[in-house]
Amino acid sequence: MSLNRQEKAVVIEEVSAVVAKAQSIVIAEYRGLDVASVTVLRKTARESGVYLRVLKNSLARRAVAGTAFEPLAEQLTGPLIYGISADPVSAAKVIAGFAKSNDKLVIKAGALPNNLLNQEGVKALATMPSREELLSKLLGTMQAPIAQFVRTLNEVPTKFARGLAAVRDQKAAA
Image (cartoon, rainbow, N blue to C red):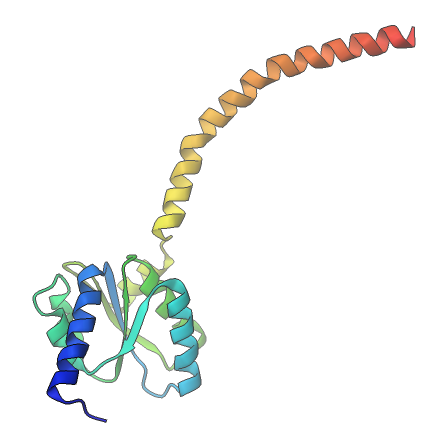
């Protein structure tokens, strides 16, 4: 079903708004995928906060024009599904994870702001930890010395209490 000019303008506006907030875009060729598989992919993407859309390539070119993702426009050929994410690794993780279990979905390219990625670059990006994981590791690393110091300070009164309990038990046994 073709869209009229107003509907195309609405689609371009919607996708442009998402792209403006995006940190990564991944495109994959979905030729041969059945509807059930695409539905599973959409559900996974929605749960991960990834905007997933099948879009006419000409509309996608207009949506990325004038943005940091403009170099991606050269890669927009064939039947493509677009994964757009505000997290730099989420879209790559979702699409690469699905592509592992379904060989009909082929990652074609991806982009970070002002940086075009090839298929290997997208797969490498998918193996990186997410922002939340990195922040939790950083916080754990920062808290470790403080927690160890607190345990060390807490050990002095604990040893004293154990010593008193041992003396009490010794006197009670005598």
